[in-house]
Image (cartoon, rainbow, N blue to C red; front, side):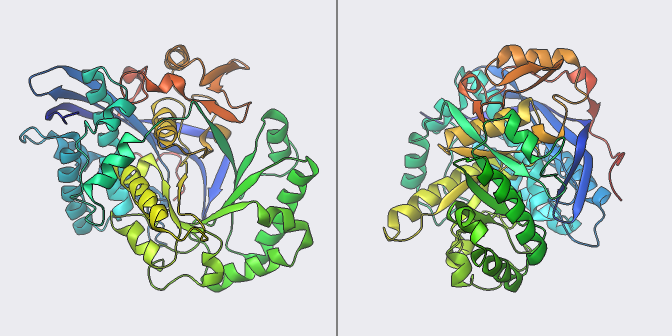
Length: 468
């Protein structure tokens, strides 16, 4: 398939406050609500049709930028600025280009602006990621194709200009091989503030859903984390669940402390089953020291992957050279980066010693909300062929939150297999421990319905409800 040349029109950004039903703690910050950003734009295929595309992402404080001197409110202001700058750059007159060609241009301009503005690379990429998803949605609608069909034929024009370590053949093989799973297992997040027993705790979640995959947040304190892991594993083991687990330190550990934690785990007979089911360790170290030295071989053997440190197109190859075995895929970090990293994982595994641990692409959430955000991220993960995804947004927000009932009804009508009506609210249909994905592969990028645009506010600079 030839990648069509396109132009963009009428790029707009909006937001909506999303209160949490219970606090969510990751790393050093506890969040009780966050703003969700939305993008709407027009895509015009040169000599062809025109369609409207859209996307959405939550703007959580203190994840894209964890610098101690930067307040939570300031980190959200940076995300707003990132999106506003991406809208401005995307609105500039330019010759028609492929979808990926536009991404490359926006990515370069955004990086230069962020560097001059003391904004992190992850925060800078947020705005471009939203624009890219909306472009893919509009382009696929204009061509009357699903986004997987578009990617299979490389209608976005994905090439090697940002990843010189890859060759074009590897990219084409990866794209041509995309075949989405009809459903994907939920990896249930156990946050640092989440109870184990009692109302709303892990025991209640196990009663409500058939969960087989878990992601446990770590605090950076080996003794405290050992005790909490013992309690969590004990509950799951008593239920007789055949499970697998990942752990996420959100940059909270020092290397010596992480070794101490594993020493405690390995010495604890109650955690023997747990350690045998541990799939990976996600981003244990501060992103600013991640690339300072090779991983200790004892940690490398645990399949350590990067997440927050994945802030540039060369981050994953640099991590591989230091002993890391994988990288996370998140729509908020960019769908093209996820695709190109998938190609890298395929190449690394093809070249690896058969006796070694495999290289991995792991699907992670950043509290994706029902509607466009969770649909587009879930669809991308399913297309990449990954078997499970961390899904935590629906644990912390009551259905569609403050969205009008008509918006929730529209998404339910478009995706009756993905959502369900429960206690008067429309929610993700998560009781089976799996999310159905078939309805996400119609024309467009997993949209099917649109937000109630009239209910949204123009992208602003409010910090209402955020920790200072």
